[in-house]
Structures are given as C-alpha cells and as structure tokens.
Length: 404
Image (cartoon, rainbow, N blue to C red; front, top):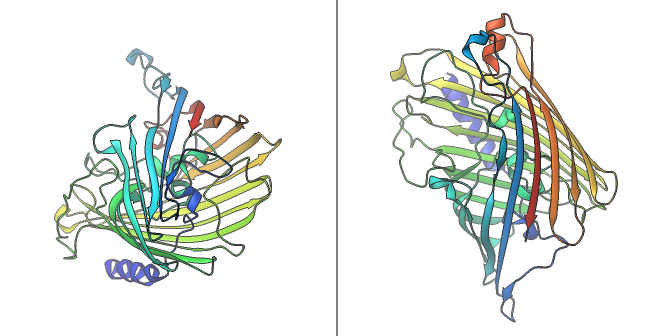
C-alpha cells in the first residue's frame, strides 16, 4: 500500500514541477555574471555566444570531534580533518547557439574519479515554457543545491543534506543522504508568465561520482531502477535569482516558494527505495536574504533484504544574510536533522554564524563560518554518542574564492 501511495505522490506532483534557475546570467550554476565584465566570444548576429568561466576556492578548516564516551586509553585525536583544502577548482564554458540551444561543460580539478566532470549538458528551448535538457546537471531538489555555487550564503551546505542517515543494520552499501546533487539524466522544464515553472527529470540516481550507465530494473516494482525527480516553484515577483548574496543585487525584491519530490528506485547496492520530498522558501529584499527548507526521506528495503520495516528522516534549516555595508554580509543558519530516524528520540541541532566580504573590482570573496553540532532529546547516552558519529562538534572554515 505504501509503495502505491509513493508512486501516486510522484505522479501527481511531477506535471507541476518547476525550477527558478533559468536566469541567463547564472545558467552555468557555478558563477554569476551579474555586474561583471568578462571574456566572451560571439557572432555579430548574436546567434552564437561562448563564455568561459572559472571558480577556485581555497579553505582553511578546523574540526574538533567529541570523544563519544571512549576511554582516553584509545588515544583518540579530537582534532582531525583540519588544515587546508581546495573544495572546488572549476574551469568551464557556457554559451548559446542559434538562439535555441544553450550548453555548459565544467571540470572540477579538485575532485577525483567521475566527479572531475562536474557538469556536461545541452538544453534545447523550443519555447520559454518548454525545453529539454540532457547530460549531467543539478537534480531538481532543494534550494541549497540549486543556488549558484559561488554565491552560497556559507562555505558549506547544511549538514542535514549531506550527512548519511543512521540505519540499525550493518549494511555498508546502504548509506543514503537526503541531498541528491548532480546526476546524469534528462529533464523537461519551462517558465510560464515569469512566475511559474516546471522541471521533471529522470536520472541514474548514482550521483556525481559515476558517469556510467549501471542501473537495471527494479525487482519489486518492475520499473527502471532510476531516480525520478521534480520540483515546482511559484515566484510572485518574477524570476528569483539563484543567489544567497551578491553585492551587485542590493535592490532586488524577489520571493520564491517551492515543492520538490523524488523517488530513487533501488538506489543502494543491498538495496533500498528512497523517497524524498521537500518544501522551500527564499526571498531577496534589498540587502536582506532569507531562506528556509524542510525535507523528508523514507528509506524502504527491497523484498530480497527481508526487512519489513521502513525508516523516516526529517531535516531542514533556516538561514539569513544581511549586507551591513555594500561589501560585508553577516550570515546565520540553524540546521536540524533527525539522523537516527523519526522512530527514535533525539535529533541534531546545528547553529552556525559567519560573514562574507566581497572585494571591490577583483571578483574575490572571503567567507568565514563557525558551526556547532549539538545533540538533544536522546533516550540513552549511547544513542547520543552514535547520532553524531563522523561529524565535528565544533568546526570553523575560512574560504577565499576567486571567480572569472
């Protein structure tokens, strides 16, 4: 019965799914070109445009981990995963041809394996309300991921999206998280009256690190074991820019409401069907940015696993930023996550504060943040210790970013 309900939910929502990320200047999803001059190649007629772009981020990281009740004899290092890192070193190009086809390709030299190819897609727009995109690109789920990478409020996305959930089984191949990120697939999308849009996609469901066709048919539901995803947004004041802070946009008045859903059929090796749903809000009002999301995931095992139970997880965040001056943005976020499932007591609460400084005339951005991961409401100390395994109790990040 639950399987039937899940499929019906997907079918009902998909036809109305939308995206607000179709503003031409942020179409690459990495670098916004708003208010910037750069190198562009184009024909006199304007029917062909080629625009290279670059994003480099260098971080200083500090992470302090709780000892989780271990005896000091284990000589555990509380400070780990600290030092310097390069999260992204992206070189790409985007453009349009024949006033109908847009294209984008980007390489992330800081990644490895299939993740080196960050994006590779082309988009055919038959009309503003109907277009087809094919390749590797962002799946239509969560405002946090669909924001332009170089214009996020904080150096890291919410932990509730990236951390794997906790399951009461020792299955190393079953470690889903709520965020879906980049994937290979095809989608149809469009924008109606500059207020409504839709995006419906089918993806491999294997994430950004796999560029191969490796899926099969579902043993339980007898449909392709792929990721079926969609998103709907309403923007009452026109298209919402894909930014959480830009000094060139201090006179905006935009608002966005969104719903999204996805079903990843037999997503893991050993294996589960993962259903996700989310709701979001974002607004820009002059110097102020506000955003909030709540998302839900149901993890159900396949019949061959012989596990009858399914597990439910809930997460979300509220965040905001305000330009104190034309170059300095103060930021704050509260993130929460029922990482151990709704059937178990306790959850993670994760406040964070930070600031962003935008250097004038050179495309440099400096970001700093501090985050604390707390635990509350757990029934036992063991549950409390297990809930934040692998997560730093105290973390600090300073990030310097250059874009072109």
